[in-house]
Length: 333
Image: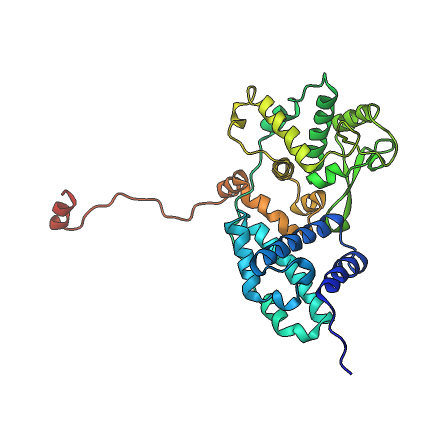
């Protein structure tokens, strides 16, 4: 007796609830990213085929349509290749799950799984000098509540090299200031790490915690309503600090500084101080030290230092002298 084919809507719900959340224990951020990918895909299918999401079938997700969707993301929505590949990764993950639950659709599934990620040039990592970072950290107006928060926020970001999601999810219980000075970060893929604090950063955090709700679950960096700051909120406050720092640090003019730029700067300054790449990988919460090699690629000063230690094997250049009068004549033309 043939097993009834599972409905597409049920397949999608099972994928998110059972596969991603129950079985794999994916983080909230991952689930949200995959959800966004499918919402965009279903909206595209509705426009292309005139089918509401509840009436879509797995057969509708054939390779030509998925390729058109990926092109739509780049050409019409203006998404980067990196974002395009992230959406494709979500579709691939779903299709691998569908292959187990709906074997009858394997021909369509295999065609979609054969769509490769798009290659792209990886830009050299941008980072700030220590002088630029110091100017930004000194920029917030400590005479205001938001300025004091921003000052501690930026100092903690630079000290820890935390991702913006790790900073916005930081809770009072994650700040350790008694026997040791450190923060407990909850990173990507449910990975956790403890990062030590400089004395100044610890002192600033200690003073700041006295000005906010000190219950264990309260956010360390709240907005005016007491809720955790958002990613866009952190970017906005950083932009304000950069603008305020420009008069005292003209080299910041024209710089595109994001929260991730602060993270890159932490890594580069650790590298320039002689810290091993494996330690930097642990500090930043990278899944592999191989990811951290990008900072070594970006450190031109380190490459120049290595070059100075090497002896140039090229022979000493000598002045060319023609061996023939006719050649000597031609050489003067």
